[in-house]
Image (cartoon, rainbow, N blue to C red; front, side, top):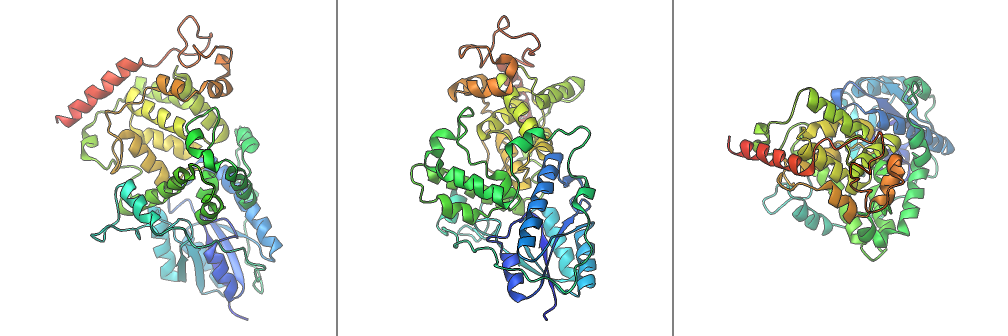
Length: 458
C-alpha cells in the first residue's frame, strides 16, 4: 500500500475540477486536511461573514468526501506545524495543494515546502497569476491589455469530474469538531439574512451556476440594475473554491448576447491576483505616491460619519440600501459597491482602507485581491484606476439605474415614497427617523477636490 498523501485545502473546497485532489487520489490513500490558521495571516485572518460561510462550506465538503469513502480532517494552528504533525501521524511525506497568491499563503507554502514534499497545482483561476506577460516579459499592470492577452489563451481546459472514489488511509488522524471552532455567530446571531440567501458548498455553487446560465446572455443589460439584479451571485462560491472558474466559463461561454461582459468579470478576478502578486501590500498601501499626501478626515466627526456609513444611515437612500443589504446578507450588488465606495472616499473624504477593512469583515466573498483592487480603483490610487476627480453622484446614479425597488426593500422607512422622491427625499418628505444627509453632494465634492488639489501641490 502506498503511503497516504495529504491534500491541503484552503480556498478550494470542492471535489470537481480540483487538481490537487484528483492527482492525490490517483496515487493512493488521501488525507484531506483543512487548517484553520489565524496566525499566518495575522490581521488578515477571515472576517465574521467569511467564517460563517466557511463553517457551512466545510460541513458540505466533509459530507461529499464521506460519499467517496473519505472524510475531512480539521486542525487549528500554523499550517506547516499542523501538516507536519498530520504527516507523522499517518506516515505521509508529500502534500498536494492548489496555488494561492495572497502574500500570507505564499509564505505558508514556502514554510510547508521546507518540512514536507509539497506539490502545488493550478486550478483556482483561468491562468496562473504572473503567467500572462507583456512583450517585455513582465506581468501586466493594466486590466485591458491583461484581459486581451489572457483571452488569447482561453478557453480553459475542460473541467475534470470528481473522483469516483477516494481511498482512505489505514488509520485516520485525529480531527477537531467543526462546532468547536465557533465560526458561527451566537450572541447575537446576526446571520439570519445570510442563511436565507445562501447555500454554501459545492452543491449550492452548482445551483447558482445553473440558474445564471439562463440569464447570462442578458448580463450587460441587467448587471447595473440593483432592483433587477442580473448578476451571477457566484462570487462567494468562486472565492471559497466551491466551483472553478473553468467550470463557470464552459457553462456560460456559449450563452450568446452579452455574456462576453461576464467573462470579462472572470478575467478581472484573475487580474486582481496578478496585481497582488506584484504588489503584496496592495490591501494596505496606495499604489500612487500622491495619495500619501492626501489628508483624509480624522477625528470624532469623521469617526461618526464612518459609523453612519457602516450602519446605512448617511441620508443617501442608495448608499444606505447597499450598506444594509451588506449587513443583512453578507453581499452587495456590484454597481452599488462602486457607489458606496465612492461616497465614503470622496463625499466623506475617508481613507479607502477604512472601507476595505469593513468589506473584509462583512462580505461573504471577501477576497484580498479583488477587494483591494476594487477599493483602489474607486479611490483612484491603484495601478489601474479611475481618476480621483471622477466623483460619482449617488442621487443621479440611483435614478439612472432605477434603484427605487431596491431602496424600498432595504430602507423600508422610505417604502411609501413615490418614484419622484425615493432617490432623494426632500426634508418635508423624509420620514421621521430617517437621517438628513451627512454632507450635501456639492459640498462633499468641493471638499474632496480641494483636498486632492492640495495633495497634488505638495
